[in-house]
Length: 409
Image (cartoon, rainbow, N blue to C red):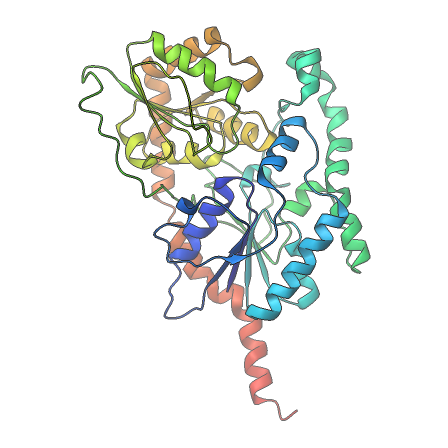
């Protein structure tokens, strides 16, 4: 089987790698392909990544911040060609992709079953009252309230704009349209949600859409020695804005932390070589997030599923500071579950963050909400479910292989 990940954010690489690393190697031959990324993403996985063309990560993140689409038809055509070449070399019986939208084209052109990994809050079948307004530059000009009033009219146009390059490629390759952006995100023979319905409910889910459960991952980094630096009588706050969080919001977070009687560990995801931080903040490139979340009173994240779910798995509430749509959808689900608080990145002033910090330090309801989500996470073993579903996902090809082996022709 071949795992193929987009490589724009750390989360896209590590959760697919974590899933691949636990596949039974005595039963299955496993390959992992992605673009260049931080080495720590695959440390301990036993995977040797196959190189694959991916758009420049820094430029992609800049496009996301400006509200621009990531791919144009020529780029997606190259993605498809590279994947077809990869299939020729690996000859997979199953492809598992994470935010690699071109796989729905290349895998179908070769008749290879495709399992698509995507969060349930991005699904067209997700239960949602509305879509939150991301921090598009227009929001800073007109304000979030005014932008929200016009968002329902703008959204269909925006979704059509973002999916148009993929639809163009599908047409050129002789495939039918995907049906829309959300439909393109879940396109595959199987769709696997690294979520639980208690946090991200859906309606009328097709039979081949499955809740896999969160995929845990934590960097294999040394534990931070907190003893010599911090006062033991102060609560710990774990802070990371990951590979795609807003740097401007981080400055306000550090200002608030410096004014409060807390200890904090900030993991920069290797993004900042120099960072002025208050004396009560210990700064490291990477940290064992699961251990720190366990020790922390709460966790500050960019709102995305990766670190937020890491915190919730330990029963700790989340302060999410989202900027892009994925982060807003994840954090909206967490807030709806009573397990965290959302502060818009564009509105993350010291005053707003100080209020959120106080609530997270004091609220019993938020801690109880986080523990409820942790209990739901604990009941969903993603590796066990994935192994259980593998024969079904491979079934078509196994039957075909048996037929070809026994056919006189």
